Length: 167
Image (cartoon, rainbow, N blue to C red):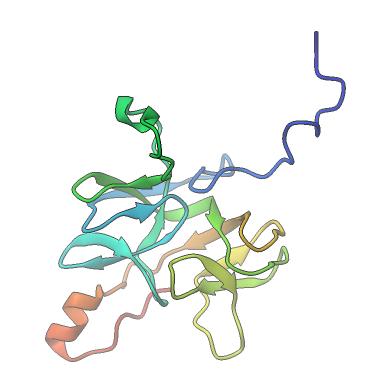
């Protein structure tokens, strides 16, 4: 028997890290330097993926497209890439991201200090635009186009330049 109300068991929001549209998506791989949550901002540190704490970012961690047998252990509810795993990092496209504040569709997005996303203020570096609205603690679809001139923080500190020119 079909479920009579399509909204009964699902509110329509995608899970964090899910590619949200059929538009072109560019995903690069990087080894995780630490636990990196699905749908969180990623920065490169010593050529490894780490949770970004500010813009500019390298990209956004996409979710795993497979299930690991040990994910079913009691208490292992983390939707994250573990240290040493190869993380899929979306650099172009639209993905569902974790949000730390209420967001509105059509507004610019920036990175919060925990790697989640929030609306960009006038002084913030924007990293993309929200295509859907969302409530604090949930997800929203974020469209990004990362500038290929992105300079990882580790490279910037070695040269004495800024942390990057990419958004």
